[in-house]
Length: 155
Image (tube, rainbow, N blue to C red; front, side):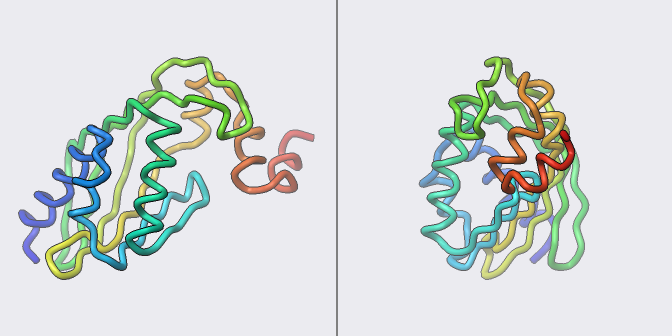
């Protein structure tokens, strides 16, 4: 796949996710899509798991908006960078956020198969998201990864 087509697919996915349009996003994803977000400690594969993950994410960040500002491509992969803006809501992370919209740099590595996005690795700084949201990174990590590792850092 050429780099222009890869970026076109990535841009279309960014636009769909920025509208919180799960059906439009799903049309761009390969049936065996792997979505990884190391900051959240998540990795999901397949149509049903990706759809569920997107609904959870948009419930947590209902005003999610991403702008892809640049990219680089190889023969079969694309890396994009840009800015994500999102407001942490609810208590899904075991904390009560301040309601302010966070603005963070984001890096996304995409893989492709059959003219669809087959992998997305979504990288951002969880500590910065927590700081801008007025919550404890240790408390959020305790919910995401289990209390053993998070509590060790706060003791």
